[in-house]
Image (tube, rainbow, N blue to C red; front, side, top):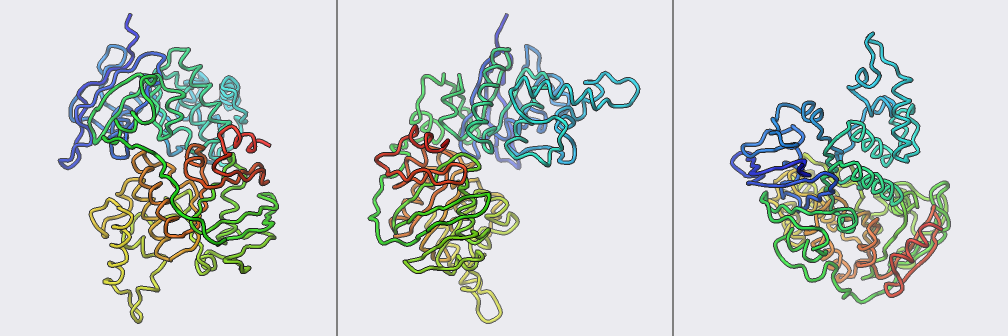
Length: 497
């Protein structure tokens, strides 16, 4: 009996004459974790949408357990055994955890013939499922009371509850902590042992090599290759994805450290962080590391005036400053790039030009009007300097790749001529090629004498980019490490103190 559960051949899809997928293939075995890799725009999203019945392909075939799969609708595909965990969490906040897990299948789950749903039975079954997964979430609590990480675990429970033969996981760890990642990987291994096949999509290379058995790479909508994960390393996988060798992922530090630009002394905010003190020099990258909930973003937001601290001192060039709002921060030469670029970084329906110049419109004002010529000149300079891939300043930001959207957000901050830039998760959700470009951009910022604070959940990124690393645990500063003494093990040790 064949151990192949899913076979895809010649899959193609075009939009307005542009090929999103061009004769893509993939073979998935029972009990296999098969990573699907590629840069943004490689065709992964179209591939997934076809597989779960959201999009109909132009040509090609999908064979599940020896039978050709017809693309009629999402529910039909789900019943045939293909389930998906989306990167964007799809929940109904006012329903309970149990109701979300079994949404649309209540009668099927409880065996109701009367038309009345048995909530107690649904809660009991959800509780049993969550306990089997080793996840400590109450099944009768409303979803709106859960953290994003807990919501993600409920989404995983929902996929498992479908008795899926194939589960697609799209960036399943983008919003969960290291502890929850460990739980997810344990669940994945248990699913493998039961013969469930998993298509795993992630930009995090360390995850891929930890959990994947096989890796398929797409590039520009085309199938490139399928290899055993054990046959590849970071360098060879990156080369397959971007079509060229990247000698070093992280640029060598070249900037000379200058004077202290930003000084923070005894910064505290009740329930968030306590007694935080550090300095950042011109031309230096200070990395901030710690587990989710350690207070990293809260410290950044306090310095930037989004959620001011209760006590403590902030100094710019040795002078104490009082920052009560982001406007104050910008006036003192502090820029901030949020971890949530889609909600806080840009306005999707505005153009690249409008987003880039949004925070510095006063500089382009001529009387009561905005000078298009001045605005165009500033935007075009940023587009050229940051190598933003766009058809022009008039293109909507929502149509750019994740990496280029991030460059737009950074460009907007740069137009205010900051002395200090705080980057919160600067490469979250961007592909490996775009990460490399952003790392070069950050290196260029320090070469120009800008002081950089970089918050990241990715330890290789923190280690590869930082001159010094401040480690936080539960709102407390537990270590300040130099580039030379920092290791993953040492950072994790101080992160859990």
